Structure formats: structure tokens, C-alpha cells
Length: 141
Image (cartoon, rainbow, N blue to C red; front, side, top):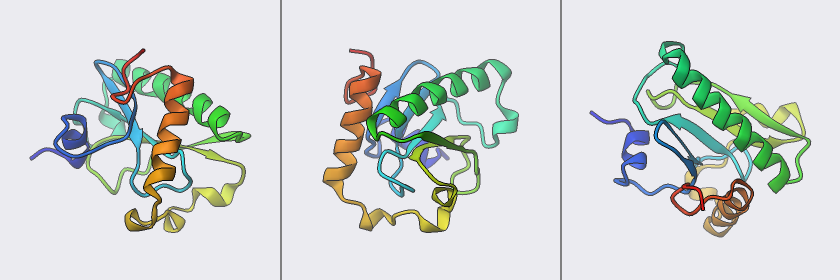
């Protein structure tokens, strides 16, 4: 059975994409720690990040670093948070989000899906895409 991320990647579920290539995608999470919280996900379904092939791990981190710079710029944040939790969806992924304090790393404080403002989510994706120079599918312009 496909993971929820695979369903998003394949267009079976909606997603606010900010980046996409042949190995990695990045899209906004539906339960953000802060607006601009992005998940960087390999297209290949691998449950644990420790099981990723080395070249895919490098590609994933390269995208995470670029997305991190973009969220810092887009949200005027001094840092980009980076977390691998791995418990919510059995598909390896990196959380990247704008931050200015350690307390932002508390996932119990994430906005619930029904508490997010769709307009702010769309605006966050638009800001990040503008910096990454990508379209609504995350592809280069």
C-alpha cells in the first residue's frame, strides 16, 4: 500500500509543492510548526532514513539545504530548522521550517490541519517557490 506521501507525490492527494526533481520532492506539511514548514521527501518509498541509499540521502539533503535557505529568506528567519522524526508517516522525510527559537522544535505545538489558514499556507508556498524559482508543481521555471 502506498504511503500518504506517495499519494501526494502521485497527485492522488493535494499538496502544495515547492520543489520537484526525478528523486526528491518538497511540499508544505498540513500540520506546520510554523507557516513555511516544508517536508523534503524522496520519491522512492523508503521507511527509515537510515535505509536510504547514500546517493539518495545526499540528494535529499541537498534539496533540504536549498529549501532551508529559501525558508530563511522567505520568512526573514535567522535559522532553518531541520528534523528527522520518522514516526508519523512510514516514508523517510526531512522537516525544514523557519525558526528563531528552540521551542519551535516541539511537534506537540504544531498547528492542527483544521487550524491552518489556507490563504497563509498558499502564501507560504508562493514565497518559497519565488525564491526557488519553481512553479506550482515544484518544477523549475
